[in-house]
Length: 225
View 1 (cartoon, rainbow, N blue to C red):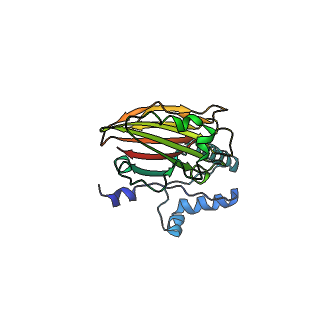
View 2: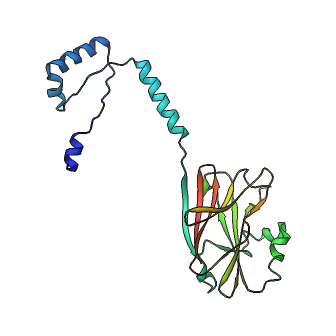
View 3: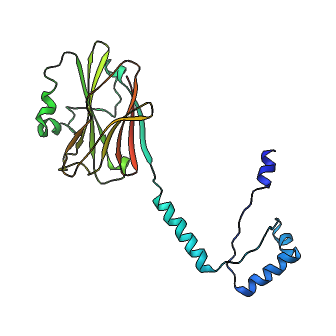
């Protein structure tokens, strides 16, 4: 059966808001075949429903729509880690010494000192996730530290509260995903000013995503090692 034939078999419902006497007139026109001629479309049946019932059905439909999760991804970009070690880093990733985020080393002394005893090449970058991305009145900082020893890369990913905030939004989730599956995740409690994923390792060519999720909205950054 062709698509055109399929389309011709589709059924649609047309609603008229009329009084009882007006419905009786429509019914007589339908019975005589005149309604079909006037509208120019085939009429299969004509039914009457109380307005109260229609209002209840519409309200139920609206409530179901509210219940459906949005699952909106407001930002999705790709970072190439192999390029980072060549000094080619996407401009959205700020250096830890950038004036906008330098307070991190002041508020969290361990954040600066944990690079002092490294055996390999260290890169630390910070991504500012603002309210225009997650539609909330806050800013959070996604910080990733990479340590490369030979070809292996060790990754440490943390989420910090903004400078003017005492804590992260309660319930915000930091998640590591690979091949479409969530591998690790951590959720902020009421007073957490920082959350951190367990350290993980990647090899050249590996792909993974870091997600920051709040309610039904998520920010996703894809990485290629």
